[in-house]
Length: 165
Image: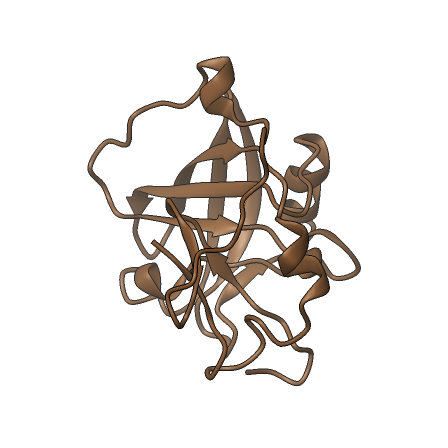
């Protein structure tokens, strides 16, 4: 865990604490499912990230989940995020310790799409080479349950992880 206390939540179905006790979810989150905009995945590798404050403020830090890191280049590579018929050029820094998106591209993507804490992004790896990485992105709108925003211990240590299944 870094000293910045950054945490990453991967999306899935039900949210529960390590001990298995379910956490309450928002009653009526607004999602793309309600608007019919979610497309089926193509079967290619993907990761799903629930956005945190660190992804959307100050330095706008963001990168793929650990599940995809072994499949991505270990160097700085131009990367494209495709969403809703538009594209954003960013850089993926595979040689750095943090292995994240760098440049202002992620910040522009987040702002252009009005991303908020609690929204989730599904990054499907469509193209992957040492010359270029392309992700098809789906945005799932939703609110983080207040229990996550106010609970300082949940998700901040290996002893109290947030488990999404």
